[in-house]
Amino acid sequence: MATAALPSPALLVPTGDARPVEKAAVDGIVDGFQPETFLWIVFHRPDGGARVWYAWTTGGTDLGDRIDRLAVAVGLDSADWLHIGDRHCEHSTRGRIAIQAYPLRPILADVENGVRSPEDRREGLRRVVRKAAEMTGQTPCTLTPRWLGVGPTLLNQK
Image (cartoon, rainbow, N blue to C red):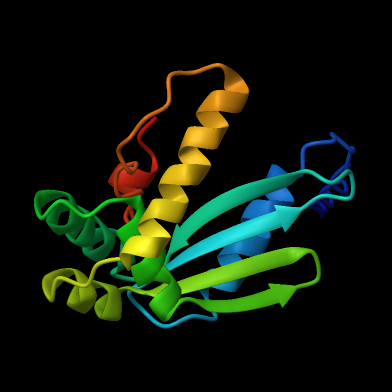
């Protein structure tokens, strides 16, 4: 009688690449949030660096892209993105992992209802952009940068 050979155990080799572990953590984090949520997940590394992951729960990618198209069409900018996002963001941590969860339905409602950033916050953002340009030798911009996005299409643009 023939016997089946047992599979040999997998050999785990350290690679120095944390992305597969981070991806597994992101997948687990996503499972803990409601549908139609955008997640901004930051892995803080021991060396002081960080890596950002974007993730969406069920229905979030399509709704996020829809919000972005509308926000851009009505002329919302990064000051509005910060203001609207702050109104709805839920912050949490898991060890060195910082999680910002953005329920997308309330963000859509704000975009549809014309919610805008207060002017003092908008001007503060412009000051930061001008100072960054000055410090890097670039030409200062007088405009507020564009809406950054809550959907994958806009967020993944270079």
